[in-house]
Image: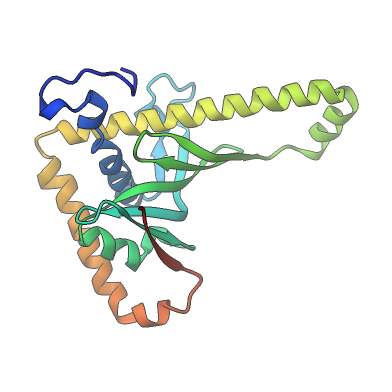
Length: 226
């Protein structure tokens, strides 16, 4: 279904996209905690059954930027930038206060590929996508000798498209996993309980040192839209 689908029956005339818009922030918030719960490693075939390798592991980590929107003030955005955001007292405090993650930067490592990407909750859009890939010196020299500038450019475009397709497939697989959990009757008793416990335990560990954290690389800014 397209984002501009105008099916407006029920829910006071809201479109289907508007009625389901809560799933994006819920997904990113769930994913933030899920990464910690699985130790940052996911068997790719578990989320993508058609993946060529049944045993390949993907390493996934929270990146250097998170945006949150408080439920009580949806016009406000809280941006947290820094390192070690997977264990951030500021993020845990915001979520405890009722905020959901509005955008999340992620790093995916698959074999020799490292994908950096930012996911937007409102529509699942991918932004700032960048892939770093390891090539041997020999392969790089051979490419430089055998390919013309036009061929190199065309190959780079195809490689970028392939990387974006891979990122989209991985996110689709993670989103489907989230939906399956979201629809399960144990979602509240297991997933939500686990997230609340992580927030509580994290804040207990972080609060004594929050004053010192103020001088770290992390910065918090709030933007209010007009």
